[in-house]
Length: 358
Image 1 (cartoon, rainbow, N blue to C red):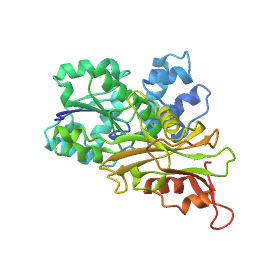
Image 2 (image 1 turned 180 degrees about the horizontal axis):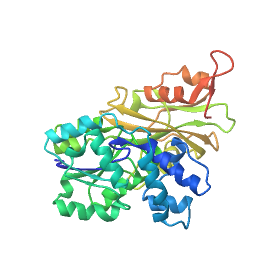
Image 3 (image 1 turned 45 degrees about the vertical axis):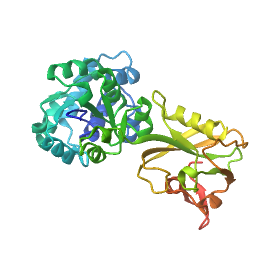
Image 4 (image 1 turned 30 degrees about the vertical axis):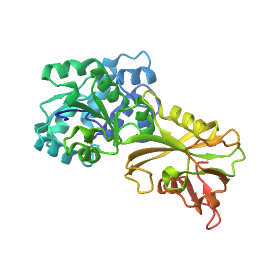
């Protein structure tokens, strides 16, 4: 049974990206660098933040940077809000008697003021903020509070949170509501990945060990274009009730999402691919088309095949290289159809889909 939860703050419980990006841009301007948009910042930022600043401003003393960042953060009027579903999760966890703590790299004064403003302080036994490297602190914090590893999870939105959990020997839960994109945090191979905290609550609610073994499966798949750029590969498989879809499979422990994609495509089709691009993440809960009960987090990509000779393994029955029009007319499984809709946009002639990302 999970009795203790260690939470990251930014991007996990609170959306503080607006003031953080504003304060980061103040630092960049101070040192003559280009500012970042929210999306650019999400792509570039990483923890520990000491490594992030060493990468973009090598050799500049961190204390010197904080003399710019902290006042800019404090002076920002950009909005800070709760992540959807976070308050409800905290309330249910409190009613369930779970002990809750915060481990955050954000400035302590910012976390304290945000917690007070949003009415969150009372949920936590202790709020630890300003932690530069969580992997170095988490074990001592757990020992200080007598938290058993088998009864404790770490919930966060970045690879560093997953690494911290692994350093302490506890389960890691990645939420896809914050700073890092799904394909980025997947590189750390979290034990559990959920779209948001409401999905985690559904798993913890029963409080049974067997419930905790039914975590979502992180998988990868790709819409593959042939070398001519005119056709895409569709495969038909019994796993999806005989419907057509794309090749892919589960991410193995210790494997990055993109490495898993290359491996699965090679195993299932004998194809090698290049120019892999992430498209979207799909939260696929108990799909009726799948052969057994499951909850998938589908990381969907596009890619270019280096050849057209396909050899299927025993997971599929048939394959075809087809045009975008032909693919849309096939009996597709629902996740594949959603992927196609995300990739294609209307072309210059009505009714003719054009691959937007292919």
